[in-house]
Amino acid sequence: MGRVLYEVSFIGNIQNWFGIIFSIGILIVGVATQRKNSKMDRSMRIAITTIMIAFIAIYARVVLISCAGTLIPYKNGHYIEIEGVVQDYSPNFGNTRGTIESFTLDGVKFKCSDGNIWGYCPDRKNGGVIAGNGQHLRIRYVSNLLGNTIMYIEQMMPEEWEED
Image (cartoon, rainbow, N blue to C red; front, side, top):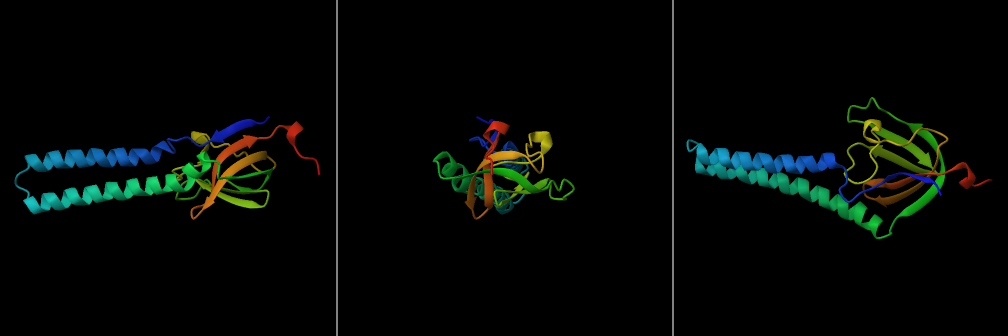
């Protein structure tokens, strides 16, 4: 039995939920401010509130669609499991969009970003577990329009390595 290094949770990447919570907070403050500030035209208040609600709805929809496309299939057992040695590892920590790790395992290419809502996020400060080339892993992933999303990573112990 290997050592489980990562498994997705129902909460997902908590940083993305902060976006929804922050947006709802701004909506509440905005509505409260608009009521006290009667100098603003009524139609302008309605327009601003509508835009805020639309933003929150779009963001929440993206989170839920991502959940339906990755987390739910994984929890229902609809995933692909592979095992092998990490190859072609690239940490790419200098990327302007955040940390993006890429590697190949058993011929399958993975690109992992800190922006993932559901699935493995590689930032070592937040628990990144891929050490580099040569690491023996068992990975469960869901393949969809977003690519190959890693849902589970297990470090294989030397006695479990398959001998060729």
